[in-house]
Structure formats: C-alpha cells, structure tokens
Amino acid sequence: MLALCQTFGALAQMQPDTNQLQTAQQPGTNQLQTAQPTDTNQTQTAQVAAAPGRKVRVLSLQDCLQFALQHNLDIQIQRYNPAISQFTLDISYDYYEPVLALSANKQYSGSPGTLLTDTNGNIITIPGNKRESDNYTPAINGTLPTGLTYGLSGTWSRDSIWNQPANGSGGYWLPPTWSSGPGITLQQPLLRNFWIDQPRLTIQLNKAALQISEQALRLQIMTTVTAVKNAYFNLIFARGNVDANATALQLAQQLAAENKKKVEIGTLAPLDEKQAEAQAAASLATLQASRQALVIQENTLKSLLTDDYMQWVDVTPKPAEELVAVPQPLDRQTSWRRALAERPEVIEARLNAKKQSITLKYDLNQLFPQLDLTGSYGRSAFDNALGNNFDDLSHGDSYFYSYGAIFSIPLAGNLAAHNTYRSGKITLKQLLLQLKQEEQNIVVAVDNDVGQVQSTLEQVNSTHEARLYAEDALKAEQTKLENGKSTSFNVLQLISNLTTARVNEIQALANYNIALAQLSLDEGATIEDNRIDIKLK
Image (cartoon, rainbow, N blue to C red; front, side):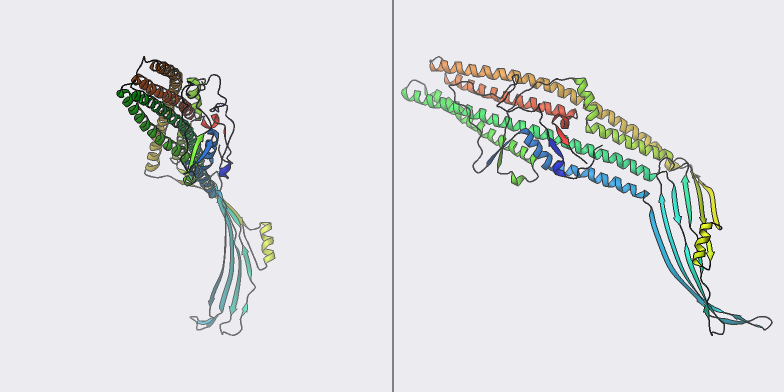
C-alpha cells in the first residue's frame, strides 16, 4: 500500500528507459526516422526557428516527464488526497483513546442550633452544625477494539463537621472522616456490535478510502505522463509539419522564379508562371497555418510541465529527440492480465465493492438483538485517619462487585435494520456488476490499443515507402521539365504530393508512439514502463 509523500520534490525519479525515443544521432537499425529530403540538388528544409525575443529550451522526453512529475498542477492537487485520507483514518482511531476525567469540588452546608419542646413540655436542645466536604473523583473511560467498554473510577472524600451548641456559645470541629471507593465497570456486547460496530466499520472504510485515494493519485500520474508523451510526440510532428511545408514553399518559390526567367526570354507561356506563383501563395498559407498549430502544441506541452506558466511564456520548447518506430512485442492475453491486475480504475472498483462488503457485514450484525455482559468490582474504606483509609483499601476488607446482562430487542421487528441490510445486498450486487463492466471496458480498450499499435506501425512502413516514391517521382519530373518534356503544373503537383507524403510519414510516426503510450496506460503499466520510481513514505 502506498503511503504519503512528505516532500513533493521527491515524488518521482526517472530511470533510463531503453524503450523510449532514441536521439536522432543514434537511430536503431530497424527504426524509421522522420523524413528528410534525400535529393542533394534540393534545398534542405527550413529549420523551425524561435520567434524574436523567445528563448529556445531543448528538452528530452525524460526532462519533460520529470518537470511534469514535480510541477504539474493536476498531480499536485491529487497528491493531497492521500494525506487527507490518512488524517481521516488516524482520526477514526480516536474512538479508542482513553479519556481521563478529573473532578474536584468543595461542598458546604450548615444549620443553626435550636430548642424544641416535646409533648411533655420538656425542652430539647438541637445543636447547630456546619458540614464541609472535599470530593475528588478521577476516572478513566474508554473502549477496546473488541467493543468492550470500561470505566475506572474512584472517589476520595474528606468530611468535617462543626458542632454548634443550641445556645450558640462555643462550638467545635468534630474529627474529619475519610472515605474512598475505587472500582471498575465493564460491558461487553455478545451479539449486536460484537464482531463489528460503528467505530470498527469507520476504520475499515477509511482504510479502503485511503487505498482508493492512492490509486487515484497513481491514475493521475499515469494520465499526466501519457498526456506529456502525447504532447511531446505531437510537438515533434508539428515541427516536422512546419519543416515539410517550408520546404514545399521553397520549392514552389524556386520554380516560380525559374518560370519567370523563362517567360521573360519567351521560352515559357505566362500561364506556367502564374501556376507556380499560385502554388507558392498556397504553400505560404499552409506554412502559416502549420506555424500556428506548432505554437498551440508548444503551449499544450508547456501547460503540462509547469505550475507557473508565466515563467515559460517566452520559452520555445525544442524536442531533443526524433520520432522513431520501435516494434514492440504484442500479446493480447498478457496485456489483458496486466491491465486487470494493475489498472487503478479496476482496483478502485474492487475497493468500492470491498467497502460495501464491510458495510454489509455491519448491517447484518445490526439485525441481532442486544445482549451485553456487564460487571463491576471495587473496594471501599471509611476511617477517621487518611493512612488507615488507604490501609483498609489495600486489605480489601470492604468490597463490592456485580455482574449481569442487558438484553434488548425491538418489538416492531427491527424494520430499519432489515431494510438497510436488504438495500446493502442490492448495492453490493450493483457494485460487482460495475466492476465487471469496468473489467470488460478495460479488455475492449486494450484490444483496441493492440490493434491500433499494429495498424499505426503498418502505416509507418507504408508512409515511409510513399515518401520515398514521392521523392523519386518529383526528381524524375524535374529532370523531364529541364529537358522540356514536362510542364510546371506536373512538377507543382508532385511537390504537393511529396509534402503530403512527408507530413503523413511524420504523423504516422507520432501516431505509433502515441498508440504505444495509450496501450501502456490502458495496461496500467505507465509508471513501470517509464521507469518512474514513486517514493512515497
């Protein structure tokens, strides 16, 4: 069971993950990299540059995950819930804390002396008196986890009497008397509240609630990590999209310039020049749109990494890695077993059913009548000397004890308890069905994820081939145009096709990595797969 983390900064430490994106300098032999122009006669794609006044910050995926684990607001908010649940659980143990009660009081009473005449005419003297008492009563009361209630108490009193003659003259204090009577009382339920009572019910429910809050924190970490990975992959795609469209604009502008020269010398019709210029204008509009999409992706990633966006507002995050497609072994049965064992939602659903089972156990116990055993024992002493009083207590010459039973049963059949129990049974059936539904949803999601990973990997391969074919086709058409065997329109169309192919390849690479991240999330393995060490104590 997870415990509360005292230091937020120590929440998670990242370990190197061999399955993560590899840097562009060291691509794997079986990995497909983002498309780059292969034609040495073509101008290389324009690099995405930061806007003036903005600082470029190169970030690896591990850097981004570390920032998110420490500063993401959703995680920080969720991180407090286990602490609150732990305090709530600790509070519920307060019921068993013994209570010490001390009371002390001083009492006075008095009556004046008087003279009475009896029926025979005789005068009877009733002396006046004053009474002074000091009373001290310490007590310890409490309850044990078995439901046994106990009370330890004792009284210690000192009584002094002032004897006043009837004539009002003189008077004296009689010797003080000391009395004490320590004892213990016990009461143990045998039926209702025997195997579980309200305090024990509350403790068990709060334990389950603590586990649920820990699973909710785990789910939030997993969800945030997946969101960061998706944003990182989409940012790489957005930058590649800008580069691809910048290259398309460059090629269109280059063709338009060449056509202009040919029109000027009369070797090309003006229509070809206008077509190239129109294509260049369209490419510029597409580039501008892709740059705005890039800004949105940058902001999406930054918002996940920080709890103070203003510190990042003028920062341009630049991924330190390239998108690659690393084939992963896929086994539906293994993924299903893993998901059903590790998904926080499934664990929470099981804990909710467990909570209801505990409540149902309590409701069943409340159907029984009350039968409590009671008992008490104590000693008493009364003497004119305090020391003798204590001696009498130690000898135990004067003592008292009692025992008995308390039995009670509702005469109307305990309808409230019966209906509560019936309602609890139905609620448990409902929660078990919800658990089954959650498990089924997880199985379906994992099944879809496995298919998505396989599909996107195939798309990576096909878009890679399509991009190579588009490059070769453009090269061949450019050669034909130089030899006068083609038109600018055909070249412009192939430039557009190549741009689309490059964007599709980058998108397929991003989709494949996003699909892997989603599969890991639905398996409940995001934390383990990303080597995140959650240090909670």
